[in-house]
Length: 300
Image (cartoon, rainbow, N blue to C red; front, side, top):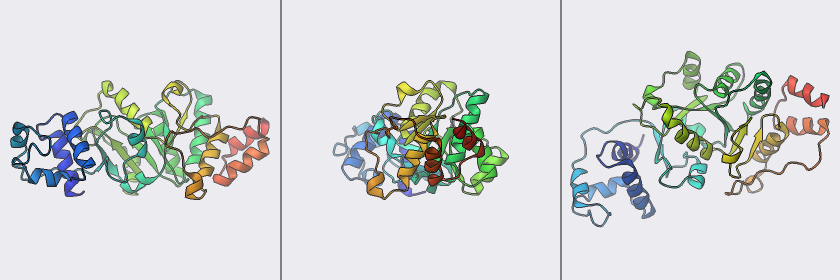
């Protein structure tokens, strides 16, 4: 963890400034090409230059002798999800995402599975879709404790691939299961949260956390109830595996051909029904096709 990131953690959560005020200042200084360490070194004399009141500048000096060493990714770093920059206003966008596990995985496109409850048929459809995702160059993402997360961890335990868990509280408040811990140590799982490490999992936080997870996504798989919140994001119902396959197929194209517009235009669905064998051929191009999915397609 860099010295600058340690400073950000302290500045936002422990400096005495309100987090929205701290975020607004960081956004301003970043746009001016200034690092937080550079600004703090010039205080309190340069308070006005950096948009601080004399009282704020005095409160920020001296720096604490020890800064927290908590893994996190800043909103100005490559691993920060691009969707958050595109879809969330600054006031709602987390300046930091706290990381547990393998941060190198965060460079992959995120496929978000919202925390929905499934019946038996829905669970089977979800299992088929997850079977397509695991092992592909994407990062399936779900909330810890949800049915989707349980399905992801189960799939990872019996196959290759990696996944992301969104946490419902801070990283220090999360107790991974033995299976999750094994996947973390194997660098096959990464957990993210915008909440500071000690924050407990409070239900009232979930609307904000779900908004962050949805905005961070590059593709969304869902069963019901989230269509109105997708706002042009590429997405598919769990039973629309051909649409998922089309999107996965774009990831294997050259970068210039696979580029997804920043507006999040949904990949077009064929206007006519595809022949089942044609659908199977498309799916096989992007990975293995689960046996039950193969059977279901051929019955149609």
